[in-house]
Image 1: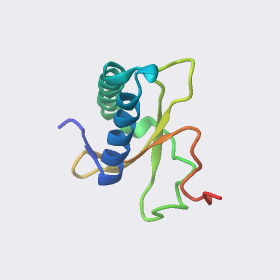
Image 2 (image 1 turned 90 degrees about the vertical axis):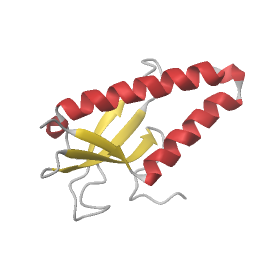
Image 3 (image 1 turned 60 degrees about the vertical axis):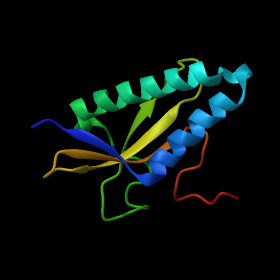
Length: 115
């Protein structure tokens, strides 16, 4: 049985917000870049489920949702620019990757104050 991935509501909201951000302004690439970003994200998630246990715990591990091991993988579709961190947990019995958050690298860690 191979692994599958699922998105949390929070991850879905972050994806929608990023797509909207690209679509909102043609100087940032518009709808075409939004679709390209989404396609690359889906490819990154498919690559992630090929070997989800190989990635290290995220800085949030043990500080946010302490009952789970939170792992991360970097998603950098534009090599010359900052990327995103895909935060996820594993359900070993169901062979499921639950994507909790897709956070831009410049955002604070989840345990840090926004101030």
